[in-house]
Length: 438
Ligand code: FCB
Image 1 (cartoon, rainbow, N blue to C red):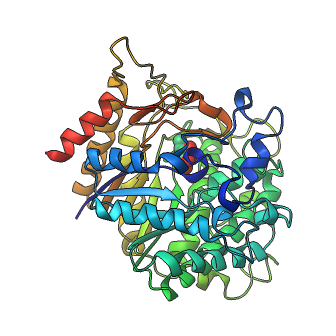
Image 2 (tube, rainbow, N blue to C red):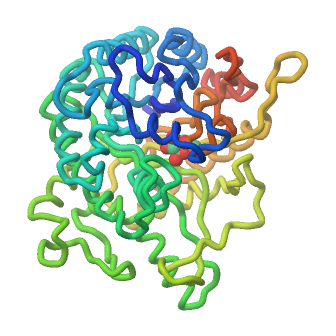
């Protein structure tokens, strides 16, 4: 059965930042530091989903999609990241899961969508190997409560983006600009994924996935220098996170001056780690937004330069709209991983637009409808070309807090007035609902 769904993430929608015993996350800290987020926006209130969740479940029910991907805020459940759990936090997700199931909607929780407990950041965050173990303990707590009803679990969301934006460039929380020194964050997240997978299975979870952000990498030209640069970028963005999980080995990282594979080569990766990381999965989650065009480096530091994709329409974010890039990505994964590739779920895809309700209150987001239609067709072409794709989740159900962009990028099928919290389904919501009715 093909799973249709929408996706959200805790920090982006919940609000209730300090309520019911929730601990602070790195995003609570980061958004309150001047100059970090556009116009100083924070997720303190966001879509106020923590209080309006019933209304949001009703919107999901009205849409008729069979699944809903949301994330669990680690500091809501374990306020300090380790140790004491907060029953009120667990109760919130317990109620949400029951309400979804009552509507026939499959809940698909993600355990980590970037809101690390601040107390763990104070210990070094994902630069510290111990965090992987704390993550597995937290996974066990959540699964203990929900695995009797939740079939499908996602461990991490986009460990590449969390490493690169959060620890490499510092444009996301925790705001560190370590550049290539951030590489341990890749390994510790992946180890956390492996340990959490083990914990989830021990608690009876039936299906476990990881969600990676992937991009087709287009070389700027056929020159040797551009091809080598594109390969280096592909390695960092895609293979660094897919290879260890699917093949049990890190890709060749020599372009970055490290190999990460054996204990002798790197004190980071210990004996047995890769076996934990590559435990079999029931699916690979893929988030796709756009391809990337890469040329030879122009400045010292990185072995590539992002030269930008041109010649396509762009979203409000300025991201190129290339639906066929999704087909290319999916068939490319199949070519690369062959039988090692588990069923694939597109766990995020969508676009931001400057959606404003018209005088009649209607949000006529025809651009989003065209975007989604094109990408769904690309998924169909990938399936025809032999890729076992089993799901497609629209990012996002609701307009929400878009990280460093604050409330400026609207990705929702449902418009949210951030002054009043009022939800208005857009034309794209009706389009998807009608398409699903078929
Ligand atoms: C992805 C994130 C998601 C959302 C979209 C636009 O990288 O996983 O939270 O912000 O981008």
